[in-house]
Image (cartoon, rainbow, N blue to C red; front, side, top):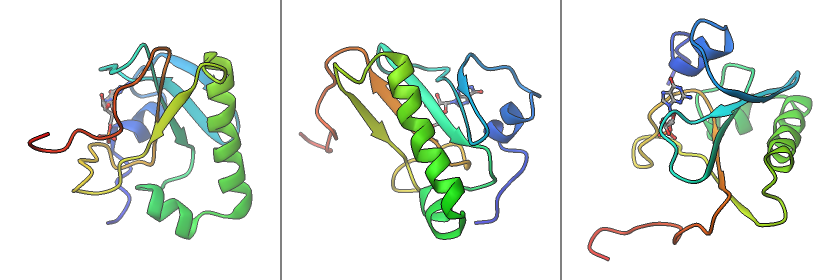
Amino acid sequence: MAYDPQNIFARILRGEIPCTKVYEDDAVLAFRDIRPQAATHVLVIPKGPYTDFQDFAEKAGDAEIAGYIRGVARVAREAGVVESGYRLISNCGADAHQEVPHLHFHLFGGEPLGPLLARKGS
Ligand code: 5GP
């Protein structure tokens, strides 16, 4: 899938749509999810145009990958969830119900989190 520069996170990156920013550096922008699903629910996105984790891992340069991963850890630290624990989820593609086609990690924490996945019928 080609990267769509009009996706909502690209527009947030360009400052065309507001967000509640919690952290920014050269590699990443982090902001609060508009529909939080935990006490702490932050989205961490790389600044480059990557549709999802697979696209990023296959195409980004090593410095970009390092900057993103370190940025995610920095956001967790600044959100105060490193001691209590947190969960990272990156939805990739249709079966994962990815809604926004710009790579993002959901960072959840701030309270005990439920089971990893709710399976149909369980
Ligand atoms: P996905 O399903 O792609 O992994 O998750 C996309 C996330 O982006 C959802 O949790 C949704 O609530 C969030 N989201 C969608 N539009 C906006 C927006 O305009 N601003 C913010 N802050 N979050 C958004």
